[in-house]
Structure formats: C-alpha cells, structure tokens
Length: 126
Image (cartoon, rainbow, N blue to C red; front, side, top):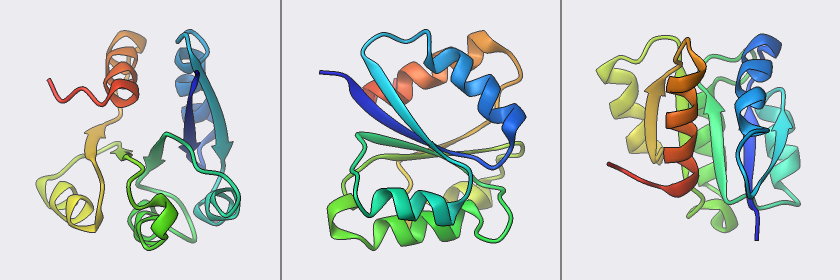
C-alpha cells in the first residue's frame, strides 16, 4: 500500500523542487496544499501518513498550522516534518514542543533532499 504524504508549501519553486524527488520515490502518493488554510481544509476529510510542512508561509505560518493540525484528535499521531531556509535551535525547540516529529533546513541539492524525504517516509531517525 502506498504511503500518502501531504506537502504544505506556498512557494511554487520549492514545490517543484520537492515534487521532482517525490515523483521518483516508489510506493508513494502525495497531495499538495499551497497554504496552511488549504491544508486544514484538506485535512478535514483526509488523513495522510506523513506531513511535510514549510515553516515560512504568509497568513498562517508553519508553527500556527502545526498547532492546528495537532489539535485534531484524528491527526495527533500523524508525523509532521517541518522545514525552513534557516533552522535555528529556537525554531526546532518550539516546533517540537508543538508536536513536530523533526525539523530540517531545506537542502539546495536533490541528493540531500532525496535522503531527507526517504527518512521522512520511513520514519528513520538514523
């Protein structure tokens, strides 16, 4: 059975970069939301296996979106991995306190992104 990943990111360039790698991964289907609000609308009727969430989005940033996701009982156990262009210790601490599974800095090359996405999909903490 294919794993279902929800990608939440407002930046079309980041979307294209990530989707290129997602399309190469076997046994995966993914959905996309271009904002926190659209993600919450999608999640009202769907439960993905894992969520990949951008930190920096307009209107509702990633931390606010994460908080709303984790407030929903049916989504409480869904792993949420957050990413940003800058990954400070403070961001990591706040995100984990809200319920993020892990956080990472957006890589600039496809090999590094592929490695991160495989980790996200398999829940591998090594």
